[in-house]
Image: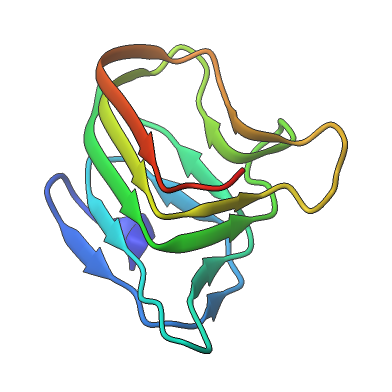
Length: 121
């Protein structure tokens, strides 16, 4: 479902584990759910890619682990992609104690704002 999302879509995920690699091509709102005993998690990492520019991406309330892409990164942005306004809020980016794993990687051309709040690396 997330892999087919388009610009401006809002996706709310249930509090469960999603054992898959996620590819995000457009600016979407990806919102996880947390309860006292469970939370939303993505265990295959996230790959950011865009044909022209990935604009207004918002990720909230997830534990994200694993890697997606060639680099050892929990969130991997395609090299030389353009990104405009990225917000990551109340997430955990878990490298799984892999010494060479980055939380975020890519030679992205960032415009606008990059906001990371309430997030643990």
